[in-house]
Each structure stands twice: as C-alpha cells, then as structure tokens.
Length: 282
Image 1: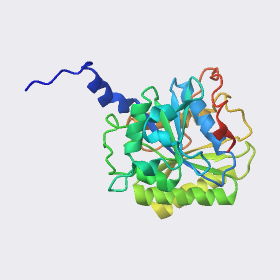
Image 2: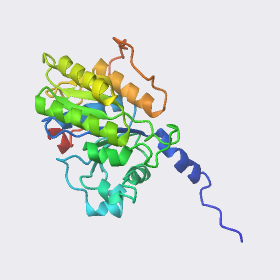
Image 3: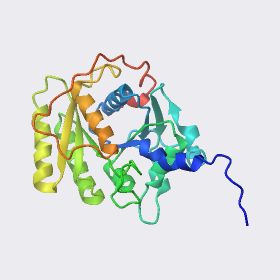
Image 4: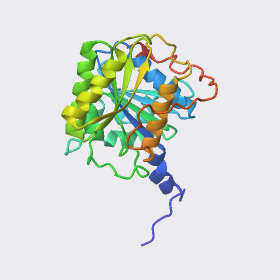
C-alpha cells in the first residue's frame, strides 16, 4: 500500500537538525537575589551580540504562572520583546510535561518546535525544576550535535549577601547529585568595587571541588545598576562564547589559570532588548 509523500520532503530533515542549532542554558533562579532579571537581560544582550535570538523560559519563583493556553498552543504564549529576545511566562509549566520517569524534558522539545527561530533558550527555574528538565539520562542524546540539551552547563546566580550564596551552593549540590550536572558557571550580582566578589566565587569553587566533586568553571560579576543594553563586559563575552561552544560540544574541559581575554570591536547594543521585560525588575 502506497503512502502519500509529504508536501515538503525536507521538513523531516529540518526538524531533525533544528535542535542542533539551539543552545540550552539552564539558569538557576535564586529568590535571595534582588536583581536576577538584570542578569537575564545582560545574558540576552551578550547572546544578541553573536546574532542569536534568545527565548527566556521563566519558570522561576517570581515569574507569572503559565497560561492555560500553553498546553494547546505554546507558540501563542511566547511574547516577542525585541528583535533579539522572546519571553515565555512558565511558572508551573514544566510539571505539566512530566513523564512516568519524572522527566520534563519534553517541554524543551515542545519549545523548540514552537519557536524554531530561537537560537538560545535560557531556562530560568529552580534547581529541582532544572533537574527534571536536564538530568543526565532523561532522554537526552550524548551527542551535542544531535541535541543541544545534552551539552549544557548550568548558570548559578548569587549576589554578595550570605543568603544568596548559600542558596547557590545548595542549588549546585542538587544539580550535581540528582542531575549529574557537575560543571557550572556563576553570575555574581554586585557592585564593581565589591570587596567580597572574588572571595565568594573562590569559596563556591572550593566547596564544589572539596565536597561535591563538581567544578565552577567560570564566574562573571554583573553590576545590578548597569543598563541592560550596555555593551557586554569582556568577562561576560567570554562566558557566553564558552556557553555557545559547549552547546556545540567544542568547549575545552577547563579554563587555564588567568584565561586570556579577547578584546572585541565596539558593539552597538540592540535596541529595546529587555525594554518591555517586566522580569528585569524582579
């Protein structure tokens, strides 16, 4: 019995390789950080500098609840904020995609189908949510070119107050022990002159190595008072560049001590990036 040919014979190939172009970045929400939204905006601006369109899936504690429409038409719930950034309010949404094994990774597949124009997907959620989404063995390919979720490095958030640092370390412990995600980066929200920033990063890195067998690969200081559309700092550019490389499976396993910085040409910030994003003020 013959079967009708698909209207577009290339559609299957496009769907097969679509996820290979997507960089998934798990960002651990931290309710003790006052300006977490600013950090998300800075990430979006840095990815835009690479010509990437970023979708922010906000399932954090302070996000709006996901619309009931999300289960019927996810694409309709994705809000364009600018030419470089889209936003999906998703608090509570991952658990609606849970399977019998406790994985919610099917949400990520649904998102890439609903937003094929997005190159980067920032998933802002609690550590427990990220464990269900990104746990090793949760249906994820081990080949980064086949599935960008398999090669991801969680981003922890903290500021220079003790409660936020404790929360970030607890999140790292959960992601390491439950999800098998042992390599992390850190976004540290603090003033440029904060005397505690480097000490906090070193403390988290030391505890990760000594007690968890985990690695804090890189950390970046982000000034919460900066404008979201300012040109990214050299350090943020480096982190974003390495995140993109990790998604392609080409990043080195460790940064050398005192990693060299690469100076970039002057950058014209994208207009309106994050201007309509209420999450920037969380």
